[in-house]
Length: 199
Length: 199
DNA sequence: ACTATAACAAACCAACTGGTCGGTCTTCAA
DNA sequence: TTGAAGACCGACCAGTTGGTTTGTTATAGT
Image (cartoon, rainbow over all chains, first blue to last red):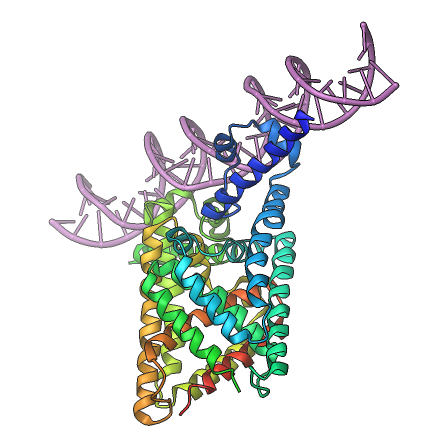
């Protein structure tokens, strides 16, 4: 019993330390040695739970990054007035963005930019997450159209895709600017676009 | 004389091979050994022209990536109807985007995401380029307002920032999707947003 | 002709990379 | 009591990393 707890403990600790390490340095530059140092575990422990570094990377994506993002988003969408709720989501994001978030951006987007071209496993996982994000946004727009809060003249597919792209782009832009003001400006431009989707 | 030519030759070759290597793998994962192999030059040659890998990286950014991007953009902007010219730019981008572009995205954005958090030299260079891009877009919007082709009710700063963000985001999104159709959808959503900025 | 210097070449280096392997300790079922 | 398996340790490995050093060749200025 205790052994099982300890196992789950070690696996979890490995996963979380690896997540922050990958978030800070990217997957390729994330060093197994430093992950082990920060967990206090040994190489044997890591390679007992994960056969390769790649598998550890996939696990971080599947079990930490993607669930985290999805939770926050789906929670913000169940509404018949998506434009308002998304705007609120943006404003809330503006408020609760930490300095670390500004510096490091979105973990999924980071991995996407780094790994998509060179590893299919990463790419497919990230693409699935982004596709889900696009689809759920698209459905939110459709619900808005039915409820009369979104213009019937807009194409929900196009705008959902553009929305997700802009979202990732905004976070990325802030990363190189490292400037909160710019995040504010961009958010206002973003909200302006969203308001333009009303009937 | 011949020596000078040869020097410029070697430096240039180094720079260009390094550029494609960095474009493919990112800066950190770009291997000096493979760059040398592809140029046919020796380590002595490289470290004669560039004292460190970092300096080579900066040079690639300063002398290849940034000029390339700037040229294409400023060329697209000198117009009193920026919305039309930007839309045309997007449509042209849609048409002339190679498979490699789809797979690898925008070199500057790649470096931005990878290096901004961990190296100030990269960050400042990229930020300067993006700032220039934002400012020139903002001025294009202003010119449009004076010419009556852009609504006076929009905030040019906010929308210029949002535009640049969306641009980078779109390229990034396509990278993980690796899907031309999605680029088309996103472009249409993008153009829809731009059209909404008219009076 | 002489010399200084630019332009390379290539052997060499310490540090680090992800990954392996033999062994140890604990837990638990038979 | 015994045996098997899970959990973990840490020495070890081959290969790679960016970077240095020593040496050679070619060219330009004097």
